[in-house]
Image 1 (cartoon, helix red, strand yellow):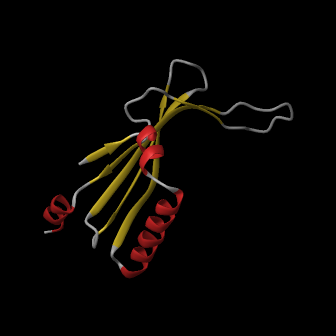
Image 2 (spheres, one colour; image 1 turned 45 degrees about the vertical axis):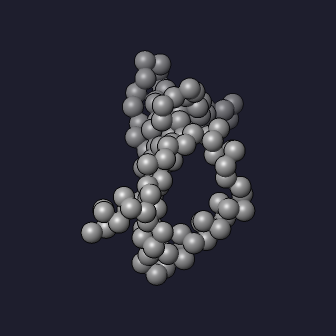
Image 3 (cartoon, rainbow, N blue to C red; image 1 turned 90 degrees about the horizontal axis):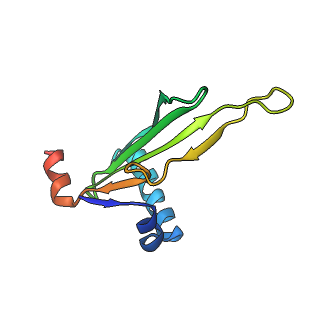
Length: 116
């Protein structure tokens, strides 16, 4: 298992590589080779009125590559109103936080065990 944070992502991933990976994953969704679970957010009240801790995660896998990935993130969120009474969303990233932006890539040998 490989755990990477935002600092590692900036060092090892390129925009070109990310786009290619997304294209492969989206093609896999069409053929049944890939699967994903859309983002899920969990809201937990904080001690501050109107502020919530929000934990978000999403995951997916591509069978032919043996890769499974999950992204975990967290922030504190509020919904203040502007001068005209409209809601706005303010997000404050919790940093450093152990769940700030983890990505888990499972090696092919491990992936083949969960497929069988």
